[in-house]
Image 1: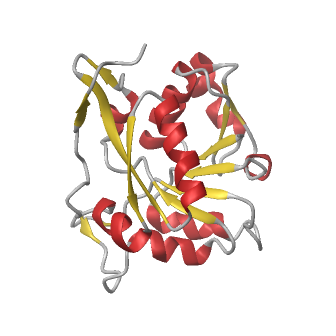
Image 2: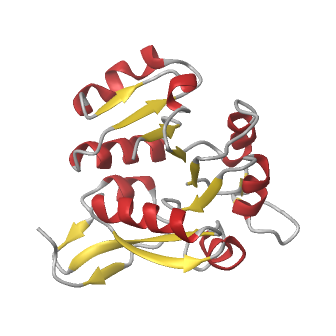
Length: 202
């Protein structure tokens, strides 16, 4: 699988670090262009490198590490997202109140999924603070847990496998209207630091 991280903020940087440490190739892109990422990604070269957004969108798996409100701008870069797995790592937060956006009761990932026509959208990587996400996931008692939700079993399985490869313990919750609702900002599984207590895999 080929991977791209769209967004170079706290979450994007944390993911880039984990990809690099796990020796999984990925590209990172933002709207400012590759030159803006040169110093940030230097320590991760050559496993993780900067790319133009147009090139990053050719990846099979595209991880959205942008603000929720900016996801629609990314969606507009393609008319058809068929064949892509789009990983929703966003949180729908209303600033400056820092409270969940009013989405009329819809899971935020369903709202996002409607914008990415044809894509298989999977919710993941949004429930840990960036500092924890970027830190070593294998702890003395086991591995930190990450949740995976989506409406396509094959896409869920691929992202759960990626989560494992990055050193975390995946728990697949099911569809976006079930697991996705639990994972979104304000839900019971957001900003957790659960550790799956099992022998650490070397």
